[in-house]
Length: 289
Image 1 (tube, one colour):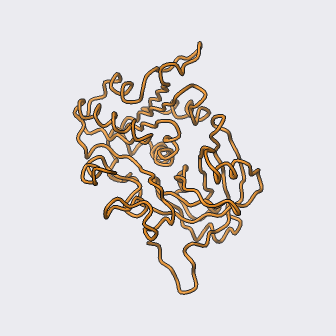
Image 2 (tube, rainbow, N blue to C red; image 1 turned 45 degrees about the horizontal axis):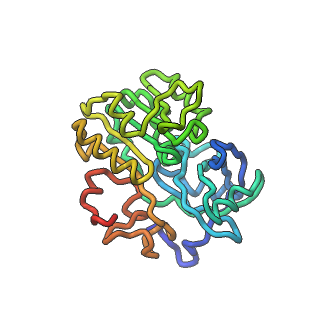
Image 3 (cartoon, rainbow, N blue to C red; image 1 turned 180 degrees about the vertical axis):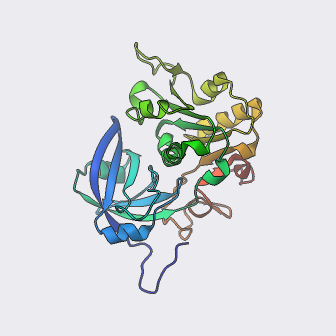
């Protein structure tokens, strides 16, 4: 739980202004957000890849998204700029989608744990994103690519239902242009177009076809629960151990720091003990998770 002074309300958000908007797909948008109060931005002190924020649309409510960009390496320059990628699916996200550049929203965070980037140094890495699940991996991927020499070969497998549903299409060519980085695009059967030159198949199938042996490789995955279920089965067949596989969860989080009891399963709170969790840890969670 974050430190709370005697006059500080942990539920009171700071203020962010929408600086940039980019439509990734017909219903997915990425926002670039700057702090209205620059000093507040500097006090934030950055965040770790994998952490999330609570974003407030005043008059509509709060919604939870991963922070989709890596924090600056140094804290002596401009205040940090927060990015988030979201799909308009309900009341709050639809209201957020309706806001334009210059609009002000609230922000609480960062919350949760983070990807163990220091432990990944020297290892080959595979980032597997299904649909908007790629947004939860983007901060870690950006941090790895920023410090490219610290890591081994990097695979990015970005999949979606159709070509139109692929996020970060503008960024993928730059990722693929780096030494030792391979980007594979995939769509579900039936989601390809006549000029599609990527893979066709579900993420678990495509990863199996790539034939990447475990050999100390770390797999970092995020996507719908059904994707993760079959992905874990595929990774097991390929010889990956549960400790080599990391995912990030989102399970009805609300308060952000383990007080409301909305996201817990038994004694495990997604917002406090996650959202980053290994496949090994997931196997120890209650069966109804």
